Image (cartoon, rainbow, N blue to C red; front, side, top):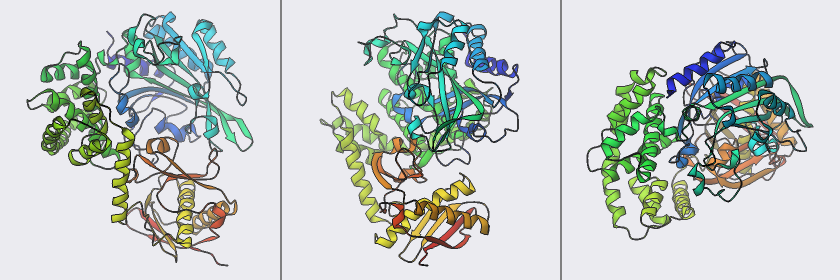
Amino acid sequence: MLTGNQLRQKYIDFFVARGHKQIPSAPLVPENDPSTLFTGSGMQPMVPYLLGQPHPLGSRLVDSQKCFRAQDIEEVGDNRHDSFFEMLGNWSLGDYFKEAQLTWFYEFLTRELGLPREKLWVSVFGGDDVIPKDEEAINIWKNLGVSEDKIRPYDETKNWWSRAGIKSRMPVGEPGGPDSEVFYDFGADLHLHEKSRFKDQACHPNCDCGRFLEIGNSVFMTYRKTEHGFVPLEKKNIDFGGGLERTLAAANNDPDIFLTDLYTPVIRVLETQLSLDYTRPQDKYVLRIITDHLKAAVFLISDGVIPSNKTQGYFLRRLMRRAMVKAQKLTDRVFDYGQVIDAVVDIYQNAYPALSEKKDYIQKIVSDERDRFSQTLTRGLREFNKLSQIDGRIAFDLFQTYGFPLEVTMELATEKGQTVDKSQFEAEFKKHQDLSRTASKGMFKGGLEDHSETVTKYHTATHLLHKALRDILGTHVQQKGSNITSERLRFDFSHPAKLTPDQLQLIEDTINQKIAEDLPVTRQEMPKAKALAEGAMAFFPEKYPETTSVYTIGPLNDWYSKELCGGPHVASTGEIGKIKIVKEESAGAGVRRIYAKLDSH
């Protein structure tokens, strides 16, 4: 069987031999990118270069990027989903394009890995009334020997890439383009599809029934959106991403990624400690979850995350406590997390030597969190077992009192033949948040003196100021606080140097231009995760409930600013009136402060 280390090296060697320079994996916590909590794809650290900034190593690059996707936590448990994974990637920055990319990737799969050609299916962009069908990619695949019945066109929801998603959500200036995915076919007799919601439909690569596994996606960054439509980029880019774990499963012709050597050493430790057997269906699900969550925790801690109730630390704590609840339910013995950590470090010691160097530190963080949670966990499980009825309100009580993640309570409730109403849990959570907001002058009040007409104008203006600062100074700018009275607005933000008079004037002019455009200001209630995925800014995301208010300045399909916010706002920017920046000063190390007033002249 091919190992994960062998596959990773084969891929890198293959593209290095074709003129690519290897770049190191970026940290799981993005550097200078406050728009997201984690590095969730191989292209994420590459965005500046895909947008035109020259890369110091040239125009052909390759890597294997470690990734974490918080939104996939609840999906873990089947044969293909994991919250931590590696993304094999290669890029062409204005160099080669579709033919070289598809030819090389197909060659890598069929010659280097020996995948049977008849098991490979591909998808392409099917076209619409804005962008034509990708006939070029179709013809390339045909010339490579892929039969027409295994080339499937899909719409923009499946085979179009931009940071904003589908074309209508792309802001002016944003690049994007069609993509082409490759799927491995494990065979029509695969029985995973029997539990699929698609079981009564004809099977196809994107049906997610379990028969097909996506193993790579080539993005053809072809267009830039303008006010008048899409125009071709002067330099077209290739952005490829392929899951290491999924490609390894295909190479070993087994649809279960957890049966690769990137997981099995951890599973063996857990089987011994918890008296479980992966071959038993009832044990397989829980072993997958604990294995994935603890592996992800090891990597997150190595990259500087510690368990907490805020930002990245919240998701780390959620992972660890979900794994701990499941382990505690299965054994009365003291669970030895050290053995699991050792197994993870051994798997990745060659690719990520920092794990070995930080192993003692990782052990301590995990041990401290275990000790912190163990007493409340024992009491919580005892309390849970007493309950005859479990609803959303009780689920929230378990969460608030014992730290039980909602999904864990829902799974425990299922064992009792009950269903927890998630919306009721969210309503209780919101009620708790509302009480917290009333009791403090924290993030949700936004430092507002009151909700008067003038304060409301100033508060809306901070959104314009925030966006202008990021556009002019850079996306490293993050809101650090604000204070608004009827006399002025004060806004603190991260920036390492004093602003020049020219910068201040440009910021002021930009704000007043957007005010003059009289852009609509729209409030929407939506899940926090959805808002963040659509590009909404939130530099204190832990302060917001799971369903929250999002304020968009500009048309919803072509917005200028989008932020999670709980304060009052005007209906359109024209109501604000002209803004004058009156002072800029230091507010501490690496933090600047701007004062601005309504200009009455």
